[in-house]
Amino acid sequence: MDNRQKGTLIIEDDLDKMLDIFPPDILESIKKQENLSQLIEIVIDLGRKPEARFPGTFVYLTERFATRNDIQYVLNRVGTFGKDNRAGIERTLHRISAIRNRSRDIIGLTCRAGRAVYGTIDVIRDIIEKDKSILLLGRPGVGKTTILRESARVTADDLRKRVVIVDTSNEIAGDGDIPHPGIGNARRMQVAEPSHQHAVMIEAVENHMPEVVVVDEIGIEEEAYAARTIAERGVQLIATAHGNTLENLLINPTLSDLIGGITSVTLSDEEAKKRGTQKSVLERKSPPTFDVVIEIHDKDTFAIHDNVAEVVDLILRGVDPAPEVRRRSSDGGIEILQTSNREELTKLAEVAPPKKYAETVKNISKEVRIFPYAVSRNRLERAIKELKVAVRIVRHWNDADLILTLKGFDKKDIQKVKSMSERSPVATIKSNTTSQIQKFLRGYFNLPEPDLEELE
Image 1: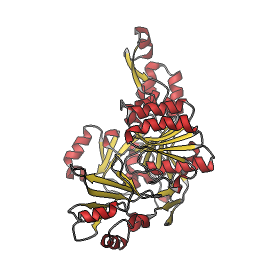
Image 2 (image 1 turned 90 degrees about the vertical axis):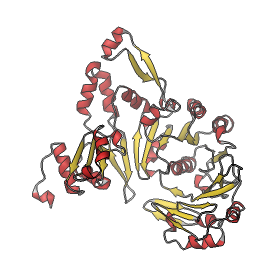
Image 3 (image 1 turned 60 degrees about the horizontal axis):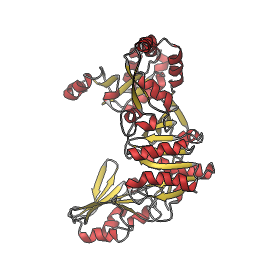
Image 4 (image 1 turned 90 degrees about the horizontal axis):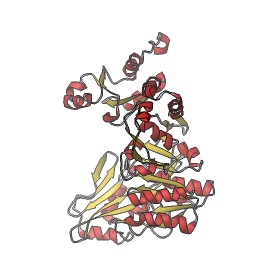
């Protein structure tokens, strides 16, 4: 077992067990790779050169083309493929996915390296310990399943709770009848077919009396209903769902129920006049299934929406409350990059005259969402932190109040910048340096210029 410590994270990859499934010449080539610890997956497709894929690049492992014998060699050394075309290697987290032809013969394999990472939830551990139901969101590959696995282990071993994992594709606890030690003392229920996940979720609660249920990828209406049933029985639910942000869920008709759902309400003339709104308004339909939504921006950065009911209510009133944003620092500590203004906005909603509410919120909510285009994100983050300005960096220009780019680059990629400018204002800086970014932010927020000593 290969243990490598990275900051406060400990990584176990059992990589040797995956490498042993490959034909000898492919195996020999894999072992020669210098960055083997960064291996993402091995791809073998019939009639093509086998590939080893690493972050941002790939290498061919042989000059010859893969044959049916190569594929069969691997198939003989892995577990049984389910209806989701996935198999594994017993007591590891490695995932083998198959590509089939029209005759259902396997003609391609994607062998993804699975890693158990210990310490991933340190940044959000206090939230997990509060017995609240938590929904994790994030793009594919950002580490949602890794965090689920670690959450199951911590709640079972450290908090001494009865934990059941509903493991649909064996990604949380690995292949085989004996689960991977990465889940600690948590129990694992396997799912015969992905379409039966919702039924196993209910079975877990009815038959095994868990205090915590862990589920990966809630994606259909039946699973959303099962999640609500679990939460209503007082069981803590820790799960992931399709979508990158809370706003994504809100407009998803299938999954919006996870955060309370939306319904259209027709007000009386008197009530509409009192609120200062149209007669038809959107309101939250029911209590949310999850108390907390955590957006995973990357493996070290988390945006936390606490008290989801209040957050959704504010969004439906046309306000975008700022979540608390935490980041794991290089020394293993926790940095608070942004504090939440939810409580302040909620209190204001209770006392402010409805007609003036939106205007009042606009005055106190000074956070600016900036999308850096060709501008260093790390330098922008550093400038924001040093100047302590209310800026949130967003990952898509559609979500931005302002696009920040380089002078000259706006002419180099004129069509793209023109499209952006139709949605949000575009500002330019002379060069991609921290000092130029700080100069822009000082001007934007009307901050005083630094003295000479500060510049030095």
